[in-house]
Image 1 (spheres, rainbow, N blue to C red):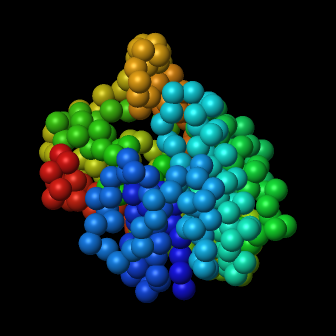
Image 2 (cartoon, rainbow, N blue to C red):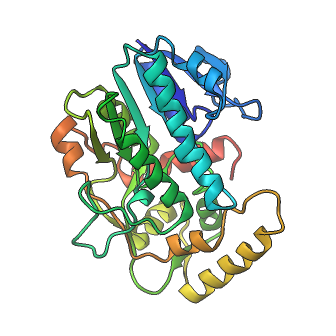
Length: 328
């Protein structure tokens, strides 16, 4: 089997590549000339230089492939237009390339995000595949727009969509700062009320993604892939504290007002920067939501997905990797 992976130089995409190689697949990856190939070095993958806006490059990339795992896109941008160009328009370009140049395609797997749907209203009502999409950020709106575009191809291509929540594990830069702060004895908590999240380790996510792509029951459907349990941030910080072997650590509760003030200041200065800021007003909105939780019932029912990596093992795995690679 020949497989194309987009976003292969990134966190989730690189783990998809590793999992596919371990299963004996022939893996092809696209990359841009500005991409860092550190996660692909010395691995038996075919590399094709092509961006998601390159019609000729994408046509070459999809020829002869049996599966396409589309994990590429922008996670940080200066405005909605940048997000939409990469996440919606780039996805449409890839779909068209597959439609025109991959006649034997068995599956197009699109990696979306829970942000396309938005947070839950309460602990007893996690979002699921039937929940109306109400994203609260530009990134979420671009993933919603991409999903809507993907859905127009359901009658033309064998497509499956997966929506991960918060993802963590080796190579992740998004959660690294939390571990760095915790290693200094501070455990940050947003606000004064309990907040709950669905969370998934990269090992569980990549396995679930491939299971979804290879199941006959998932064509034309969308799925959340996450943890069985909804974890409070208090629980997560306690697990991180144990994994770091910190006998003394202080839980520091940061008021919503402070979070949004800092986010607003960061947003202001971001206007004068060439590169987009990782932390901005919308990221602040993300942080202060009470329930970023989702149901995985349909994934369990349709293709037998289950969480295999416990929070305790997963956090220890991530921290050990960061230390081994001198990231913290």
